[in-house]
Amino acid sequence: MSLHVAFRSPNWLGDSVMATVVPAALRRAPQVSRVTVLTPKGLGDVFLRSPDVDDTVEIAPGREVDALRAGGYDLVVLGPTSFGSAWRTLRAGVKAAGFATSGRGWLLRRRLPGAEYRRGRHQVENYRALAALAGESAPEDEPAVHLDDEWRRAAEARWPADGRRRVALQPGATFGPAKRWSGERFGSVARSLAESGHQVAVLGGPKDAEPVAETMAAAGSAALDLSGRFRVGELAAILESADLLVTNDTGPMHLAAAVGTRCLALFGSTSPEWTAPRGTGHRVVTNPVPCAPCFQRTCRIGTPCLEGIAAERVARGVGDMLEELR
Image (cartoon, rainbow, N blue to C red; front, side, top):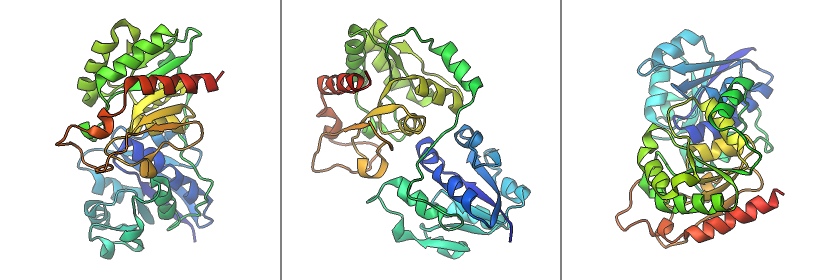
């Protein structure tokens, strides 16, 4: 039996990066002859250059059923855990596999119990379990994003190297303000790094305008503003060119780890147990409080989990990590 299997990626950048372990498992399955990845618009670069993927299809808004029908897939493995993702696959007439979450178990041809999708283990482990429904998952599978030279050239044009250590800052977090360390403190870290002779850049997408502005106001001339709208592959290349990323728990954190850049990651409302950067050399900074992790987008009491993390503590951690790279 020869199967054309599609993987419907998650809808968020960070989850899509962590889910790159799924095509790797599908590629190893002897019954799978072709692997296609379907992504929301703008996330195709995560999988585009993967040696495990034959085709990458970005889905136009509102056209997912059409995309599923057009592909001729024998099975679609669902990264999203929503009812809607399974319902749209059924409407397209394609068999679906996934976690039986959100009351959708009856829509799935192959399923894992919803209780197995849990925050008590790393999200990569959840995706490995999902991959085993149609592939051959392996415990050594780790997230990886492959780059091409075009993206690297674009990154170099935006942030030219000058021989100094390079540190990128990611002050935004699309999920919500409960995941964002203050822009003023990011700016303070930027000034400290610049005073130590390092090259500093501030990253962020269109939805990060407020935290980027706060960071740049505090950083002044200490940092280059690299925020804006550009493709994921170019962002990955910028992150690859950095020695270190100082970041909230957000998509670029996972992207940086997947291209081999070390992260100092600040966690507030979410859990490092579930979404810490994968790989070696990373550091996670938290301020344990009784209400964390709450997994809320906003906080009614002023995010003590993040407010308790001093800029000096982060600057020292960054300094220690840069020393380890010498």
